[in-house]
Amino acid sequence: MVFFTCNICGESVKKPAVEKHYQTRCRGKDKNVSCMDCLKDFYGEEYVAHIKCISEAQKYASQSQGFAAKEPRNKNAQKQESWMDIIRSILDSSEYNLTPAVRSAFQKLQSVDNVPRKKAKFENFVGNCMRMPRNQATQVWDILEKELNKMKEAKQAELARAKAEKIAEIQQKQKAEVEEEAPPKKKAKVETTEDAAAEETSNGVTSDFDWAAQLTKIVTKQADGIFLEKLRKKLLKKYAKHLSVEDLNEKQAKKFQKRFDKQLKLADSLEVEGEIVKIAS
Image (cartoon, rainbow, N blue to C red; front, side):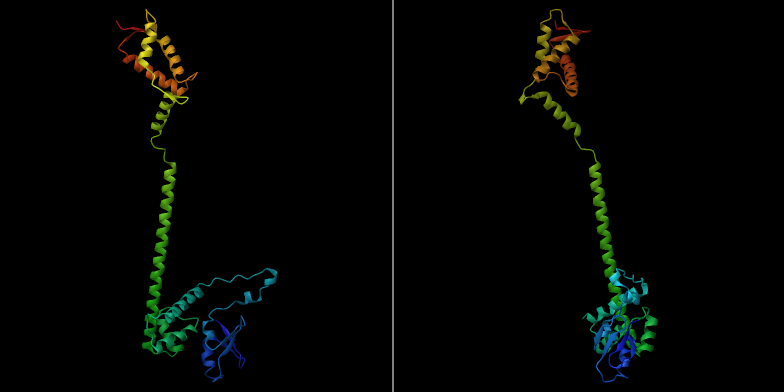
């Protein structure tokens, strides 16, 4: 509850009683009050907007010593402040087309900091404390309820939007993680292509190795035939020379053995008898 000091007579007055004070004791005088906590002066209707002030702990805390008292959390005060925001929003809005009597009722509500937030209690409160007629109290409550529902819908929409953005962000992050962990596609095909390029290309020169001709040439020099292993070694030397390398690497050696066996079977001019390779008769 905010307390003021009347700067005309010096009397201490609760905020809800300021209006009555200037209608009785200081009647006919311009309103001039100061807050008892923050010592700020207010003129005319300025005091109405002064809803909450500093606490005694904050007022007397030694700021020079670096100490600042923490304001205790008050859920009821937070709810009441939200309630006051609704009243101010209604007064600032042109949507409701308030009559002078209803607008005056809302302006009076601004000066009260313990307005009930339930319909029955609200109507009893304004009827007893503000002498508001029942039908006008009901009209004021209906407007308050409409504005409250509108604010709730806006808050729910904002929460739904924030939730949707959060879900989308999580899904995008999970998708990125899956893509990072996924094995590279067509890796085997790329390696095969690289092997072929290494086999066929050397020092910038690319040419085809004539397997059939080289096999026939080596075997022809041996009238009685040649051992299979010896033929493989001779052809291996020619193949390495073709690639301009001294020794084949592991992948090239495997590739050579595979092609050697295949080309030997396909060569119509040659025949294999056990471990001997001869010219076909």
